[in-house]
Amino acid sequence: MLEKLRERLQAHRPSRLSGVHPQAAVLLPIVARAEPTLLFTQRTAHLAQHAGQVAFPGGKREPEDSDLLTTALRETREEIALAPERVEIIGRLSDVFSLYGLRVTPFVGVIAPDLPLVAEPGEIEAIFEVPLRHFLDDCRSHTDVIPVDDQSWYVPSYPFEGRTIWGLSAMMLVELLAVGFECDIALDRKPAQGELRYHPQRRRSVAARPDRSS
View 1: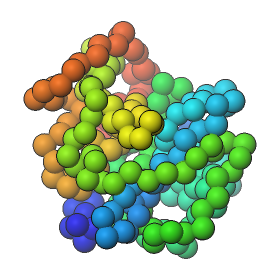
View 2 (view 1 turned 45 degrees about the vertical axis):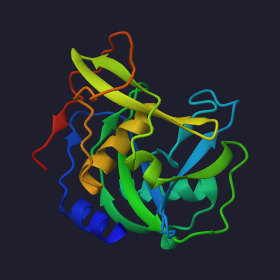
View 3 (view 1 turned 60 degrees about the vertical axis):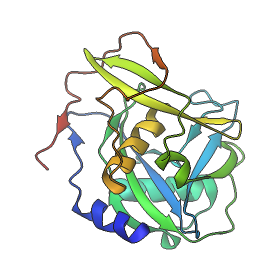
View 4 (view 1 turned 180 degrees about the horizontal axis):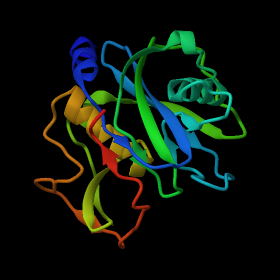
């Protein structure tokens, strides 16, 4: 499974958002178990933004970061004590634009099982894993329909053991599933079945547009 994933991600040409925006980067850590899992964090409840939410490790780019991969690995080390040298980067996904005006770049990496990870108590309440099969089998509870600049995006919401993977993290997951595992899933297409939950119209800067030339 993981070897095919490497091949597909290396052949993938992710889109980038144009325009000048604050940058961030995250890591999608795949744990190389016999049944591979995807590692997530749950934010602490007291944070000003994303309180209690499930997310991939990562954060804002700092001036000293040489590139966005450095950002993703630095933030991951700070949040869960995962050393950069323990991560095999196998690909990058398309930029996504957050509600807070950040251009977020996701990287996909493979890590060994049972590493001694430690949650940073000021930011992270829990570190947990979800079997990739849970997403490959499309175990969504519903789909959030989010209109942005007159384009509707169909974002799955995945419950797992009392937590929910949704929003920006779920958008990244959709591309990982479509590209890396050739699943029949897309953000710009209504799913074949299941409950749809409609959200109000949102706007983003006209400068934040996909650039597929790179």
